[in-house]
Length: 154
Image (cartoon, rainbow, N blue to C red):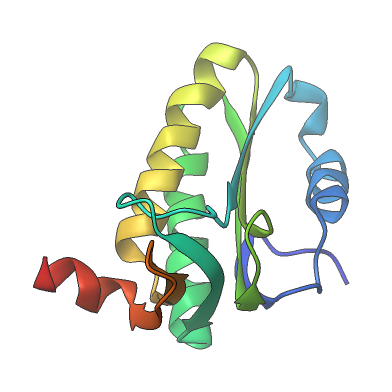
């Protein structure tokens, strides 16, 4: 079964190599002269210098798949773009682990870099993916919070 352009996936079910191979199987791959890739990873430290012990990511899968696919379809219609893929993972993650792959393939680097930025900004704003951060503050106290809740309380 071919890989879809986008989706929410359980951790460990998709590799970066899978994503690259799927782009290379695109019927218009012969038009590709550049691929740009964004890999979102778990940062091991918060802005306040607290240590992140792990993240939990959950998503409304059906809606997440729909939103991510819509973003990819919208951006694929831009000049010089052949393929756009966004794959976001759910589950429990340690610092340094991959959370999301965004890949844009197009005719030239000038085509792909701006679209890569747009794809990243759109999935961050639009996709129903929820992040719970587990941290240890500088005094060693552990706590956890849903990131959207924490931001609104600051």
